Each structure stands twice: as structure tokens, then as C-alpha cells.
Amino acid sequence: MKLSPVQQQFILHWGEMGTRWGINRTVAQLHALLFLSPEPLPAETIAETLEVARSNVSTSLKELQGWGIVKLVHVMGDKRDRFESMKDVWEMFRVVLDERKKREIDPTLSMLHNCIAEAEKDGMTDKYTQERLGELLGFFETTTAWYGQIRQWPMSAVAKFVRMGDRARKLLGIGNG
Amino acid sequence: MKLSPVQQQFILHWGEMGTRWGINRTVAQLHALLFLSPEPLPAETIAETLEVARSNVSTSLKELQGWGIVKLVHVMGDKRDRFESMKDVWEMFRVVLDERKKREIDPTLSMLHNCIAEAEKDGMTDKYTQERLGELLGFFETTTAWYGQIRQWPMSAVAKFVRMGDRARKLLGIGNG
DNA sequence: CTTCAATTTCTGAATGTTCTGAAGCGACTG
DNA sequence: CAGTCGCTTCAGAACATTCAGAAATTGAAG
Image (tube, rainbow over all chains, first blue to last red; front, side):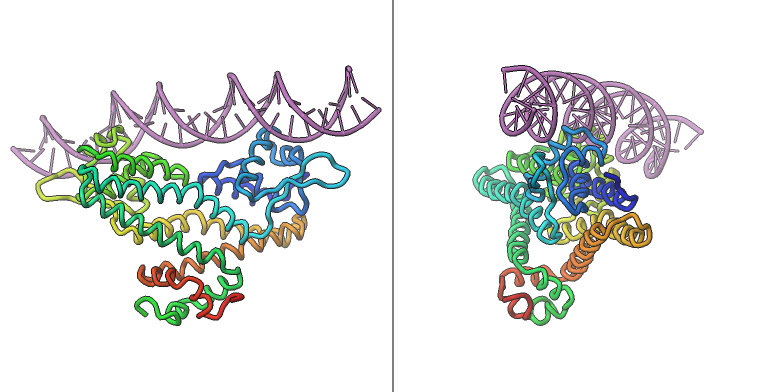
């Protein structure tokens, strides 16, 4: 399988991008390749195309399946596993955000709850710290609640909302407008 | 300077958190410490408290200043530099998001524009790839436009918006509600 | 101009991560 | 039941990041 220069550029950039957000480069590249591919690819092909070890592909595919954005599929007459990426971009990012929330934000929320509870009774943690932790918790609670709302909106609603711009805020009668 | 167990827990967790989002552990810990501190701290104190090398503190502070969430300040009668974190959580996250947009999303947008333009004339990139890239670009453009809107809302507006829940969508007459 | 404290820069060492090739496992085939 | 194919696991090598301590720089005070 031969990649066009454009495909290469995209895959490389996506890999680079991944690392900046704490995702393994190869994992991200692999995802980019599958995302562009019209049909599900076998692991062997992926390894050749990306020029990485077969074993590395295996591990990365597990990772991507763990995130829920790549699925294993079979095609008639081929006993090899094939893999395809989720193709709906909006859905894909929703899945990733949900997963990161579960893995990272939720634990942070409980850490903060715990810290705040401890601080109240330990007699060693100053008021200022308690206030800061409280504000941080408030921030996370509000934003996750917010995300919880919006993630359910159909994509068309989001698009309209964006197009409304500041009128949305005024229509809802919120803020200082 | 002695940290309470609660403060330690928070700082450690924040450092851990940072690494998952592509931010150096020490940088994140340092930020956590400054965030909790009622007054600006000199580098020396930070190094002692966090038990890291003085030089490491210096580099990390530069990094945090680069992100725009830590500032150098002076206090009367002390010639040492002191550092304080931005304290408004909402403002702080806005600054970080703005910065990440500038560093990561904007380059991705131009990469996508470029790829799409190239793909149209190179005759080597299949239609399917072009469609996928187009959808991805659409996604990034919509979400950045959206963020551009909301980042300007006062925090109170966001809070109200969240509390309205799905009523907001219905009130605006968007989506399939 | 010298001294001294504070800070920054630099370099090699330590640590952490990512990757490969080899080995192993299981399923299918002749 | 031996042979092949595909997949996964694993140990160590390669690579990248992070860090500490030494050296250099800055800048203020005398």
C-alpha cells in the first residue's frame, strides 16, 4: 500500500499532534491511516505502510480499541483480522472526550472532594488553600456538567448555536448583555 | 516551607495530571504549588518545598511564564524574584486553552487546508481521503468558532447556561428537540 | 572595579517511553 | 498430527525526556 504525499503529511502531523496531547505517536499515526482508509486494513498492511514493527501495530491497535475508536472486523474469505476507524468525526471526538473524562477528570474530581473534606478536619491546611481547592472543584463541576449537556446535542444544533454567535447568549437572557 | 498532606496530595495529583496532557510533571507541580500559595514564592523556596533542583525550577518557571499563567513579581525589601500563579481558575483555563489553540489547533487547521488544496491537484490522493480531510477540517473550524464564542462569555453566563440544561437548546429553537 | 547573591545555561546522568525481534500460543489446513 | 499463518506477549535495545550540579552570566551595592 502506497501513501500519497498528502496522506503522508496528514499521518505524520496527526502523530505529532498525538504526542502533544499525551498519545503515543505510533498510535496516533495508525489511527490517522485507518481514518483515511476506505476499507478495513489488516495489521500486516498497516505495519508495512507505516514502516513499523508488526508487534508495535498489534499493541497500538489494542490501545485504539481501548479508546473505542477502532474496531476489529472481518471480511469474507480473509481469516486475518482487519481494523477500521470510526469515521464520523464528531462522534469520534465525543468518544475520546468521554473516555478522557472517565480516565482523568473523574479521578480529579474525587481527589478534590477528598482533599477538601480532609482539609476541613486536619487542622494543618490553611484557609487559602481550601478556598483555591474549592474554586477548582467548582470549575471542574461546572464544565463537566456543561459538557454533559452539549455532548447530547445533535451536531446540527451545535452548528446553529455557533452561527448564532452572541445572539444566543442574549436570547437566553444570560450574562451581561 | 512545609506542605500539609492535603497540599501534597493535590500537588502530586496535578503533576500526574499534567503528564497525561503533555505537560512536564515538575512544571505542573510547580504550578500547583504556586496556585495554592497565598503569596508569591521565590525560586529557592519552591525548590526546597518540592525537593527538586534549583535549576529545574528556573526552567519550569520560564515554561509557566511562557504559558502566561505565572508572573514574576517583586516585594519590597527582597531583591529576589518571586512568582505567583494566576488565581482565577476560569481565566487560567481560558489562557491555557487559547495558548494550546495557537500552538496546536491553528497549525492543524493550516495543515488541513494545505492537504486539501494539494489533494485536489496532485492526482494521487483518492476522493475518499479528500472527503475525510474535509470533514475533519469542518469539525475543527466549527469547534474553534464555537470556542471563540464561548470564551468571551462571562463565567456567570456559562453557569446559567449549564443550569438551563436542555431548555437552552429548545429555547433557541435548534436541534431536534 | 570588585564582590556577592540570584538566576540562567549547559552537560552528562538518570529516568521513562517506545519500539523491535524473538518466542510463544492458538487455530486452521492438508 | 505436522506445518503454516496470524496474532500477542515479552525482554531488552534504542530513543527521548527530565533532571541535578557545575559553570557562566547578570546585576546590584559598595
